[in-house]
Image (cartoon, rainbow, N blue to C red):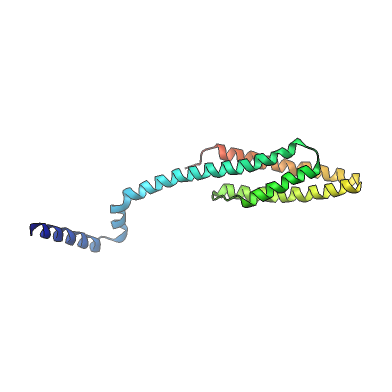
Length: 161
């Protein structure tokens, strides 16, 4: 009997406290330790996700770097087409990596178009057009180098808090 009165009294205090305490204060009072644990775990998860997304992204760009080992336009074009395909299937949630992914795709599309034109000019024997395209390809290639450096720097540095 005493046990029942104690439980009813406790329940009444909790019910009255819930009614009298504003919702924000109530949830902050009783749930704040849980919220801080969740927020700290989110930071750890963010770092883990970022690291795994960086690793996947860099793996893709490393494969495409093989294009620099050849001067054969058809082989380079194959590397660039593979880069585009891999980037389109890469799933990233990190905002900066997503931005890099979009810029990399734009770069790969532009480079692929220019390579296709240069290959066509070369096959047709239009060496003046081919040489003009080659200079343009170098400029576009430098944009790719800049993107790679940005990716490496972002993935190497810890995320700002």
